[in-house]
Image 1 (spheres, rainbow, N blue to C red):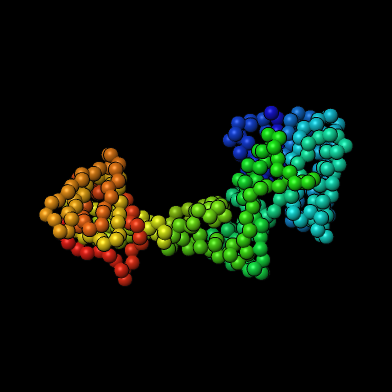
Image 2 (cartoon, rainbow, N blue to C red):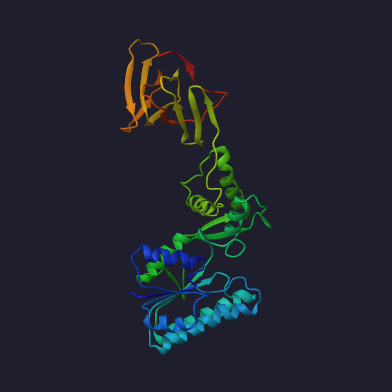
Length: 369
């Protein structure tokens, strides 16, 4: 199948072209502002499906709205008619279409051209009135407030919140692409004359700002956003795509001494804490027990001996562990326990606890195994 994508270098186009290739569509013709204008006629002669994504959002001159949102559409349709090509066509519009401003009027005029073309030429045309889109590769101060907030917050720049209670309807780029592929297969989500993406999210502007700010703070407080919430998960992925390229990494606070080190990696209120423990050869750590706190130990490098003793018994239970064979050892409550480095190199252990450490209530009682 030959697929034509206009606006191929834009936010939606770039994501779409990448996913088309992921799904095995190798004959994709990309047309953008930088393309030679003569290529559009060539592509319209050969294509079997058209994704018309080109448009103008923020021109320097208001007259560019009509030229970008109507003129190119008219040219595209004329070429298709010239070649007698009745390939299905998907076009992106906006929920602002029809508003009494230059942008809204231009989007509505483009819609009218497409719907008339569909009716007069018996061609399947899918016009999507899209809400505020967000996701990787979007542009700050251009595509959406999400992109602007992510870009600025990731760089410590100020953000503007005009009305914290203003409600936004957001749509994630991957949900847009899923719907576009349904249209490509002839199963679009149709509502009257228009099509829509069925998955959207509503959030107030102030809540959006606070949520994205929490993503930045998570590097210092070691928290993990609530990935059970679909919008939070999508926004966090978007935020990470805006990190400056020299700030992908961040330091953790290592508690180090002659025995090795202990470093917290992740803290969550509902899933506990993950830490990394490093022990030098012949070093023993632990020798304590817990009432309610429980843990999982996973040695990933070196050789260790994990020893247990129920606090009212004399019997010692031993588990020899190694990075050569990954296995998790549960640390039950009521057992004093220790871990000994019995190898010749550092012993590295990933430790999970069901609760974050609270110095006011450590639930840790020192007793030799």
